Each structure stands twice: as C-alpha cells, then as structure tokens.
Amino acid sequence: MSEAAGLTLGAGVRDPAGLAAVTGQAIPMKILLVDDDELFLEFAAAMLRADGVAVETCASAAEAMAALHLEDGGQPAGDFDAVLIDIVMPEVSGTELCSLIRGHGGYGSLPVIMISATRDMSLIDQALTAGGSSYIQKPIQAATFAGEIRQKITEARG
Image (cartoon, rainbow, N blue to C red; front, side, top):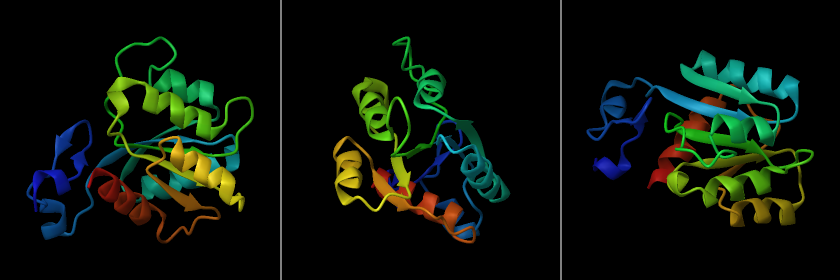
C-alpha cells in the first residue's frame, strides 16, 4: 500500500504501511460534524464515537467556521481528518460552507463529505460541485455509518 493510500492517524499521523488493514483495527480519526438538527448531531456523533472516532459537533456553519478558523483567516485547524456537512442549513447552507472551506488554502485535501435527507439532485450536485468529496444520503444506517465515513475518507485521499 502506498503512502497516498494510507489514512491519517488522528492529528496528522499517517498509516502508510496500511497497518490498520493488516491488524483489522480501526484507524483513529477526528471528524467535524456540522448539522442544524441537534438530534441528528447527537445520534451521528454517538455512532461515530462508539466506533472510536473523535467527533466535534457544530450546529451551524458559523460554529464550523470558528472551529476551522475560517472566519479570522488564521491558520487551518489541521487536526480534523474530515468534515461532514449537512447540505440544507439555515443562514449559510452546507454548500456555501463547503465553498468557504475549499477557498481556504489550507484545506485543499481535507475530505468534505456532504450529507442530507434531500432528494433534490440539483442541490446534491451543487454541493459536490462546490468541493464536496462525496455524499451520504440520510437516514444513515447505524451499523455501517462509521465504516462508510472511513471508506469515503480513503476514497477522497486517493
């Protein structure tokens, strides 16, 4: 397995040898989860944490911008392995937030996974065009959610 195929082990440590695949152990990750639905935030965060994923939650794009240091133009908060963003949010949409993340030079390779209950393909296409790495349809499946996130991060990192 090449280094490019490895995942980040938490705060920027890579798994170039693919030890997680050999040992069968999950690679530690830190995810920023952004959704205006507080119940979904709690549910999704609990599922990810049960799988050993560190999760920081934000109930708005403004909170996410602060967590990522986007609003002050500062250095990127480099300890996230991915950001999961709901597409449909009030004030600043997930698509707009994705564009802001992609516009910050320090986040070019950060996987941004869009998530939503919408069936409107034009909204999904807009989110992916804005820089979303991939998309997950709600409702999420508790048994496979963390594994799906890990797979999408691996795919996004190529």
